[in-house]
Length: 333
Image (cartoon, rainbow, N blue to C red; front, side):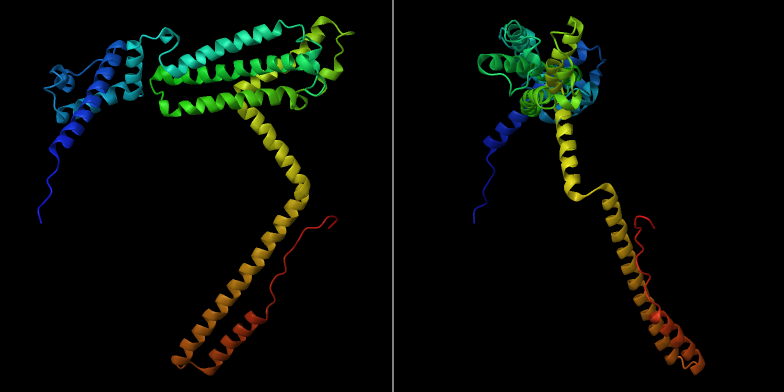
């Protein structure tokens, strides 16, 4: 049977592909190192001074490993993305070093504009801001909710930009996590509306009902109708806050059906007492078995009958001793 030889063309193309990736990342890391003022070891980067066609993959790998350690915590792939952005001819490249940053930058600007424009509407005022989502109707309700949605969008986009900015400064941003920022933005919109409309009572109960804008001063009214937009921004910035509120509500509802804390403690004590009794029974059976084995060895050794009688008495006493009943603390005892 004829032996199949490897395709040299395929191997050559794969080697060239790896070489191109290594070259691109090495050049990006050298450019970054020079910009941040890092010193380079000329013996390590000497192979990169050759022409691209003359460099071998075996020479690139040591230089690549050296540069990776030099630019840490920055990642080579992120630095390549930065270089590609600088070569881009997009009009929006000044908004950020990566496309997702530019999208969120535009989104935050649009959210801020929407917040300002909706606040100019006559349907968005100190009275309507103290209404619930079930009290208003028509265009008034739509504009009021649009104002709160814009506030939640401002908070969510601010969080995303703030989070991405830290990774970009370190050069550790990974594009594979780009989708998580968009899902986090949508969660922020939902959380902002829920917190400002449904959970406002858990944050500051009675603020809206306690303040009457017709009888209170301007300062008192402001502290009431600004509660909801502030909560919308907070909910957009921290969706985890709404998640924790929901978790606490679920735990509170579960405690109603599971019983009070005292009952739970009593049940736990009873369970521990039953386990203790069961372990005591297992220990007694094991001890009786060991004594019986010892008796058999003594019989084989032909010890006196008096010793065997004493051993039988010990075994009978062990078996006849009752197990300790579980002790359960009851109220009043």
